[in-house]
View 1 (cartoon, rainbow, N blue to C red):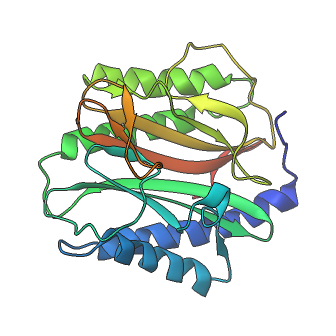
View 2: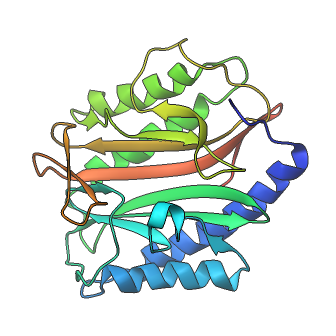
Amino acid sequence: MTLIKTTREIELLQAGGRIARKAIDEAVSLARAGMTTLELNAVAEQSIAAAGATPSFKGYEGFGFATCINVNAGIVHGIPSNYRLRRGDIVSVDLGVLYQGLHTDVSESFELETHAQEQFLQVGRDALAGAIAQCVLGNKVGDISSAIQATVERAGYSVSRDLAGHGVGRQLHEDPYVECFGRPGKGRQIVEGMTLALEVIYQQGRPELSLAKDGWTLVTKDGSLSGLFEKSVAVTRQGVLVLT
């Protein structure tokens, strides 16, 4: 069941979304070669706490950190560790913020100190922008999914077939799920008050995944580079409102 949000809830989600955006921007801007992913996690967690909010991920289903941080073939749910970042790594930071009882979710991928994979990363940004543009009254969830798939596959990459975006707000994960592939005009109708965490989850190779030994991190089975871009949005009568 889709949980429709009130105007007041959307205002609170905006406030929480600003906290999430600040935290992830600080983490991305401070990332350096030689820094551990645990240290990067601490940057984001401190930013969230300083704003009077709580990390949504910490304690969720036993997860122990404020962020999921994935590197290169790691695609989602990466556990911050003593791994030291290296120049040229593709790093994905994913975090959620709980503020005034409501969750927002955001992810960014970036290349550390080089630009060899900028074309690959730009495709993810473009796919997310296209997905957001489909969040208008009267459209269907399939219109969002189809837009992501078209942008990614047109560039010669593949979208995840096992991972998806989702509703967000009163819970961290709500209905509907928003897959990275689909057909226009199919799925749940987009209505006023719907809040979604749109995710572009994609890789340079095939979409099959493997679970790492840590029991959390999912990696591309063929070892290809992956990317993750996510923003939380609200659908309003005036148009789509980007929360993060």
